[in-house]
Amino acid sequence: MNDPSALVPPSIAGQLAGLGTALCWVGTSFCFAAAGRALGAGTVNLIRSFLALIPLLALNLLILGSPWPDATPSAIAWLAASGLVGLALGDQFLFGALVDLGPRLAVLLMTLAPVFAALLGWLMLGEVLGGLALLGMATTLGGIAWVVSERTPEGSGPVRSKAVRTRGLILGVLAAAAQGFGVVLAKEGMVGGDIEPLAAQLVRMTAGASVLGLAWIAIGPRSWLVGSRREDGPPRLGRPAVLGILGGTILGPVVGVWLSLIAVRRLDAGVASTLMAMSPVLVLPFSRLLDRERLGWRAILGAAVAVAGVAILALAEGSDATVAAEVGGLDVP
Image (tube, rainbow, N blue to C red):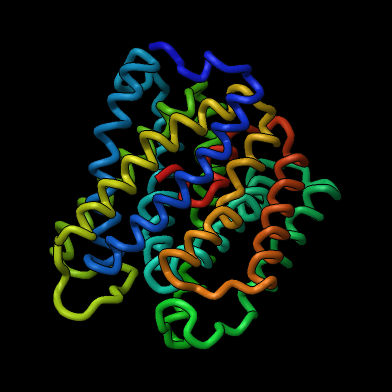
């Protein structure tokens, strides 16, 4: 399969791909937020997971020549566990946060994912956390805390009660922790089994979708697990929900995954991770236009500080490319 990115210089192609990946995560967050408001976070996560398997299978066949990786049972087990934690649970929490908080704050909270990944890598894999990594983690936490502690201005975006906002913040932190844990598990499976990231994502998504499907069968077709809806009345599979799920699925596992792989391939891992982590900044104008949120300097500077912290952490991680595709916010949804 010919790679269109080969038509331009590698560094420029990688930079454009990295920023394009971040924009895909922004678009995906708005799509799934709209679908979640209509159907509920659990239903959206279930449908999205099975839909995503189709393009992932196609991409593996076209790019890698096989619809399924030839890997050891141990590597598959690590990746399946990563899918359970990072996708089934992590994205379940994330979609709930998207509904409760809106894309701007939910995407910002996901900059905590590489922080949790670094901490868990230190605890589980014995990876060294140097001074630069600790500085990056502290910077990210400081930027997020600065934004989250800001009072929402009157008439800014959808009205959300304090209870809903608090629940959204908790879900966002849980989502980041689950996705960070999923990254560590995925790294163990990829490195131990010598598996390409795209193939690893297929295994993870298959495991996540299977668990969600079993949960749906056991609990029944209703609002389940975690995540509320923001619209009155029963769940409705109308145009916003359909377009949201389809748009989010295409932007995530199709365009987003493809661009992220180009960025990781053509740039240093730290640079690629930094560009793909720009989502909290790139989401700001869309939040202003689509959600009518009033954005002050605190929201803008806080998001920039959080992204700067991720950049420092990515540079400290240097040779680690496995985090690159997941640092953008939605765990390659």
